[in-house]
Image (cartoon, rainbow, N blue to C red):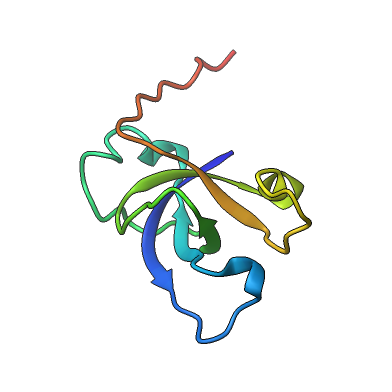
Length: 103
């Protein structure tokens, strides 16, 4: 799972019928140094990581901090094969991050 901030929505005039009423979000992944306090303020500065278009069935909104998975794991919630690469799996209220000390 990766953590990112919702920075926008994607609107499609046409899409596969399997995605009827689907929501698509633009999510920008966060770097580890942005985790603490990420849920308390918005917007987060953009990182060098690429923005991802993510299927959302949780109802995340702009500036929300979300967890998302990519690849084969993104299709796990669906009964039938579904052509998606990323899906939201969590909306975070708070994040407390403390890296392990270097050895």
